Image 1 (tube, rainbow, N blue to C red):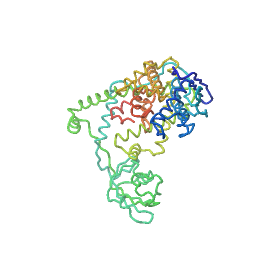
Image 2 (cartoon, helix red, strand yellow):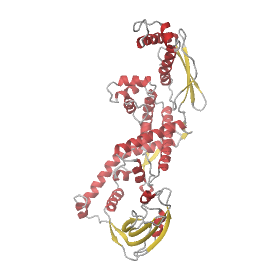
Image 3 (cartoon, rainbow, N blue to C red):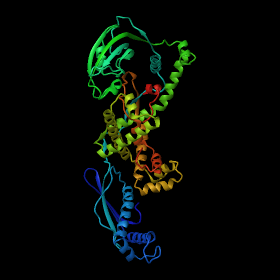
Image 4 (tube, rainbow, N blue to C red):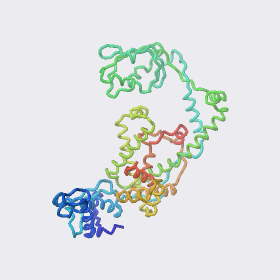
Length: 495
């Protein structure tokens, strides 16, 4: 409900999801503001011949300019009123408002001003039936335990020399001698070596380097020249800009074969610290089960959100996608900072370029915006609301010393719509998950997930984020919405 100072608030829907709001403040309120501002100026400034706070209006007008007080009151009215109008009209802006020219306030007259703001569209879903999703089975299957134990065997592998007749393959591990020279014929010490272990396919050298090695046997050599790549891999990165070509002379000293340890009681005890091989399996199964208990709710939520977003009829506006992108990037770099990791190191670990990172973030931002609008449609369809009691409860859950004061501050800043939006989306997510028809996923159909700079948990934070988290951010003067550590091997198995 608008405060007593408003006599009228008019909302007009325009094209392209834009809304025009006209707010009128009554004459009595304007007069009271003008009177208070004159008094404030009289106390704030020194006027010759008058004691502090006693200068009359004509003196203040002559000293500061006739419109100084009116301009100050106008700014206060507009800046203090438009956020309240946004909340009280139930608008959900996705951009900053644009104000029409409206002149200055006048004593004895009501004051009206208008602004236009882009708001989120109210799109519909093609169906409001329960979504059908697939999830991994609870607990640990034998196949999952086997997969994790196989990963342990791979971790503790060793190498032995293969027979001299063994040819180098695209995934071979070899020992090689190498001499490298630049385009001036000068030796490159960082690459030249009498013996270097090397695994093909590790992307340490260009793919063309590996291609020259395939098919060679122990004792065989190859000489070739490669152009310096525009985006050099790690072994060549220090040479960027120093040479246009690199000439290689390589000799295969040995082709290696990987030896995996047998899963015996002795290996389980001496190497891994378990009582026996059976104890190893039991502990791995227990770890997988625990991780699934943590991961499955998140997987269920993400699966429900993705299924619901596919039903959205229409596209999210660019402003929403840009906002989601900014939030994802902010979350990502905060996560990197908390882990003490540099961006370059992250890119190297993930095997992606900065451009691929940007493209991935844009795609995820589009997904987040689409999922949010789908949740909004679900909430509207089923009559979900964020009551005043819901909003107050969120601030009380925020843990701040004075939640009532924080709620008042958010209202004054026109931010309560963010809390209401979060509450309704949270209700929609819980309802969506509760109604979902879940079937067990076939592990044989499991596809490897593409590498992403921010996990889908980020989408969850946009849609199902507790409003109390937002209240915490307000306390830190960060009204905008705010990547999770990579799950351990067991959790990855669950996913």
